[in-house]
Length: 358
Image 1 (spheres, rainbow, N blue to C red):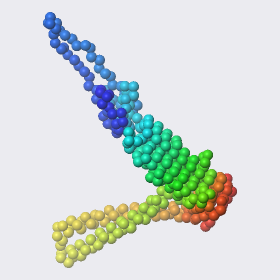
Image 2 (cartoon, one colour):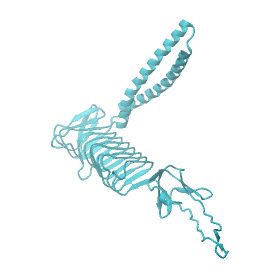
Image 3 (cartoon, helix red, strand yellow):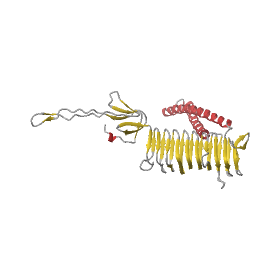
Image 4 (cartoon, one colour):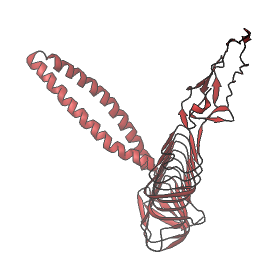
């Protein structure tokens, strides 16, 4: 096995062939000047050594990846890691990362780069104006200075020390010490109760609960909070609201074509070959669109029902909410006009009630 030719960051799929071992056999190599037989030095065949997530063929002459990941040589063993480790920064020396599995960055992620992973993403340093998209969770030991182009998107939870000028979307919950001038959509709760516990500026939406020490600022920073409606549901609902009319319009155009061709057939008694093909394709497309429209309409109606019946959700502030804060609970708005301390905002019928913080 020529281990030097194995790229240490080669990405592989489960079942990929990693290496082939060819046993070496050496025969007689000639005679010396006295006519004696020259024998070669004894050849020691190099045994295959494999480690985690690598398996051998039955004849033990081929090594295959046991999982998606990247292949490395670890103490003369071929190993496939399902977590991709970067010891330094993600910058020009590393480039963008698109990995099937989890990614751990021991350094920082510089502006302009992206990390896409089907698993978790963990960054020990600072994230600048970069894009992080994870099929699992995102953990930032420090935080992200998004520069108005940073993106955090995770199907799981997001944990960060601070989030600034960043677009954030999570299918789980968000926990941070401070969130400044960012757009945040979380299906679960948004929890900002660390040392600073500050939410100031931006647009934050949670399906359940937003908790912070301080919301807004004494400068009257416009800060919009919305709870009670899953932002992912709202996003899908709005998308369907635009998609359904497009499908309906396309069906109407196909109906016009079918009507015209049938009318022509009734008048002339037959259609030209190309018109027959057009009629057949139009009829097939109408069936496909009708099925698609039915599915979209059913999904739209279910989402609409969820939105209409969703009435819970809270905003809790353990210190102060400043003027400039707008709180929406299930489409009912509340404008903070004077500083409010130690309170929780809950929906009470068609109004939002301010209760003591619990």
